[in-house]
Length: 330
Image: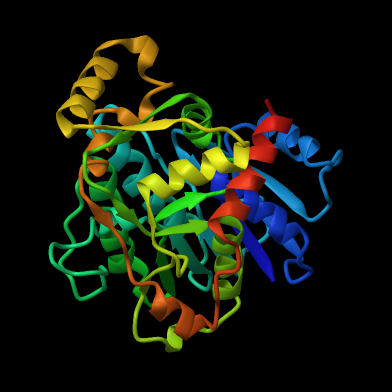
């Protein structure tokens, strides 16, 4: 089968590409990329000095995806998307319009798996333990709104061949966005947003990629639903995440609980100072809205049942793998 994968230089897409390259199921792998040099450098860092013959690179620019000269894909996995921005329009241009452009370039016989986010549904509703598909969708951010709008638009045009996965917090190697977490955990004083303890679903990137590749090999057209939460069975707290990260690094310190008002003030300052936009992108005025809710826990049991998938990686193992990768890549 021929596989098309977007976002192959990003966090999830990069890990997914490495797993796909080890799977003989995929006779041809088509990669739409904005920077061929970046892809080659990343593969070189993984020990792949020359591009495998079954890799086919296609360009991506402001006009969309150039797929005309590529082999015809049987399966497309869409991981590309905008995660951080200071402008609402940017999220919708990339996550909604860009996804529709990709769909237009795919043959009608091609099945499409789209990586969305728990942000599209929103945090766990009050007074319940788990968010399920029965709960009303209430995204808290522009990012979440754009992911939900993307899902609805794609379902309008390709419902019969579409599968949408909504992972929660994703952790694992090759994610530079976790650098602030490890830097904070290494310090004597650590900052936890909010006075109360927060609860989260999460998933290891290796487990997520394995679930994605299992799903695209299944006949999902026979299933009653087109979207699923996919998550570890383990619910964690923000304190657990910080402490486990510190334990992996072999350091000790004190965790300070900052009131939400102070987090919002930091976000306001970060938004006003251009030099802070990138290092504090997770505290931008949009994404900080997702830090405030107390509970982001979703029910991933339906995916486990329908696709016979089980998470395998613990939080400690995942953070240890991430720390090792960050050390090697400085």
